[in-house]
Image (tube, rainbow, N blue to C red; front, side, top):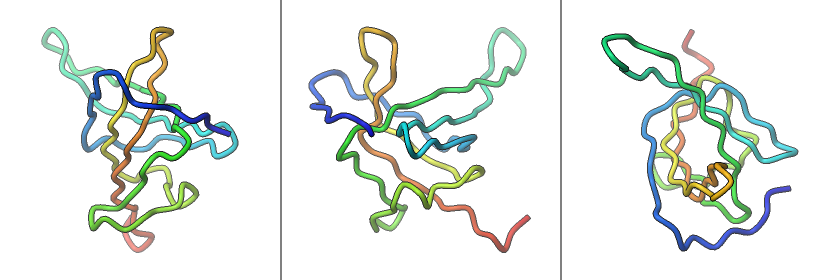
Length: 102
């Protein structure tokens, strides 16, 4: 399960990215986005480790349990980068994918 994490580093944000995968047992969230680099568009995958006690809410401020996050959902993630290169998520805002849309 994710460890506790005290935020004392520079908080960064990645906005409106698509959830590719969520691993509940290890507390990992992988997101996907497109990024423009040198006149071309590349796919970028980023994996976040979700800190114990991280705030996970929807756009209306309601608490969202981690298992409710599904691939295809859009999220904004506040995170810090550890010295070892890992990204630790402390806040996640979720737009839960509607099952009625395809």
